Length: 318
Length: 306
Image: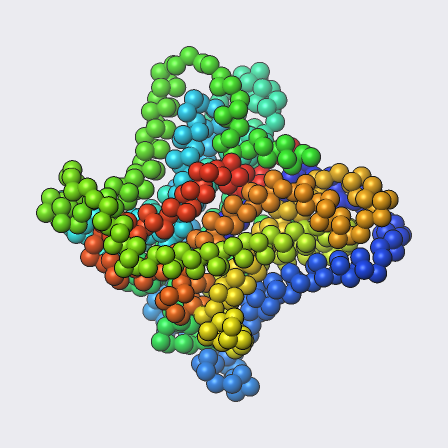
């Protein structure tokens, strides 16, 4: 996990190029010299080819492969299409699939219902510009600079059965990372620890952008602080809310690093992302089958990416 | 430049500049401070505990338990550095991160410039193609990409595997492709906020498109580029998945992914694990504390409305 996708466009951005008419656009194009047109083409084409070759074509190929029985070794022209068989296999005869779906949903629920509101709550408190606010902020978003893989290691120092702090303090002997009944909760706490700081930062930025006169008006009308927040401030933050929702969904779908460093996503830590990786990198190499799993991820994420883009573009145009 | 003024107000930095409003310390405020201090300490604790553990000897903690005082030593760092060959792994991270960040910023700024400077109907689609690419789950691309990497040959002087697979180039390219979307998105927003008269004037002076990009736009984008560079360095340095699946030779792993190998070696010794973790965290922590303003600005770039 490396990419914390971002926020919406700046509303203050002027509408692009004062919407020229078709004629105007043509005139402008003709103003460009031949070299200029070549330069513009290259400036777009090179990055576009890179992103197409490394991201979009593989994504499309994943969807195609999910309908085949390819084992990853034979030549591509010997591929047999098997229709939806891989999908029915995934659902019906693949034991880790249901736990993985459950874990992914649990992950989403915890990030969304616990970590996100808590991050928002902290942002509201810190928006009061208290003394020492900088210290609080720094402490809270410090985990955001660490990689999730590293966070897995740092928390092992608390979770380890024989050498961990938690067991030492409470005299228990629970193997927090190893016991399949508790380990999903243990990694989610570590993951939430990081998520809270990020959400807090997003909302803090959003809150600072809220027009102060809105709050003053509410105060004049005698609204209480919490009433002002829920009735006035929160609705204004709508774009940020959508972005946070999408970010949270995508983050929980992409969750991978943490469970992989703990036990490669087995024994209680099944996630769809880990199952895909196991099917490709591991001994199994069941390409068609793994692709079906990957396609499920792709479809879910594309739904939310579309919501995200629609929000962002709408903000952009205003 | 509304974006510049807007971003300056975001994040934690603004508080330091503004005179803190002096208010009486009511019991409610005291409670608030107490709560925030408690949460901050809880948040810092795992990191502090890792540092503390790394500075104690295994023998001492093994006999006296981890909740004890004493056994202070730097040996864990020495041992971790030697056995895990951190020097080599840090170097690998540099080989991958530096070119990847520079290339990402260059390519992304090219696309962003065209999107922001010229108004064609394809702009929105282009923006969507790049931004969405950054949000796809990496695992969903893995299978074809893995096959592609094992098929594409590289000359031996570029990669001793003679393939894109298991080479620094392969990792640089996939990181660039993945991170471009985010940078295109941020930079195009930033560039759209630049005054258009600038380009009119440049056109009148006969400046070519390339000059408008390189000598007019790029210098003005310095704040955004600095923020993005800081962020991208930490992200690509922290990248774990691609290196794990697209590399094979242990010696070539960047430091974040080499962590997983260390785990085996350090399995029984948490003091060593913590020393290794601290070593891996140091570069990002240094960047964070030195360039905190850029880092925070990058994360919230465009978040507030001017």
